[in-house]
Amino acid sequence: MLALGHFLAMSAILLPFSATVALVEWQREIRIGAGGLVMGFGVFLLISRRHPRVLARIKPTRLALWSFLAATAHGAGMMLLPIYLGLCRVEELDTGHRAATELMSGSINTALAVAIVHTAAMALSGGILAVGAYTWLGLKFLARTWLNMDTVWALSLLLVGAIGIWTAW
Image (cartoon, rainbow, N blue to C red):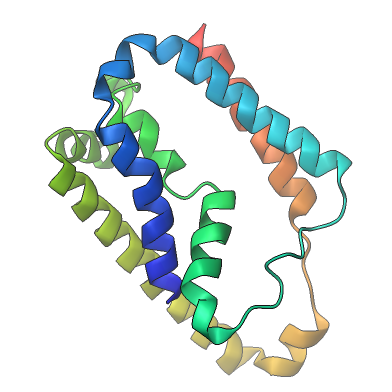
């Protein structure tokens, strides 16, 4: 269910943009707007110190919905948009990103395949980390320890948004 929700969140981002590749001519405005939006969310997270609790308690039957909402809120699929829309300079990309650019520029089926492979890798690595944490740290450690990354997350959003705007100019 976690993987399904993550896949749906990525698809909700990637599929509409795959149908609107014509917007690439507006890439500068899109990049500036996206950078401003990301920075605005970072500022909001710095001002609002409470973590949203609306998704804190869910029924197991709604795990895919929770995963979709949480993955969307954390930007699932957004990291692939600049590549998919061709906003990155291909000559400046590493080999993996060049391959992703070639794959995703092909068709909507390829974009879905990229989302499926990404989701499978996310679910596998998350599962391995969860089993490792349970095996070596145990439930008592996990219940007592909480690492709050909200400030780091907010500052990283500000930095990434600023870099996005700066590179658009």
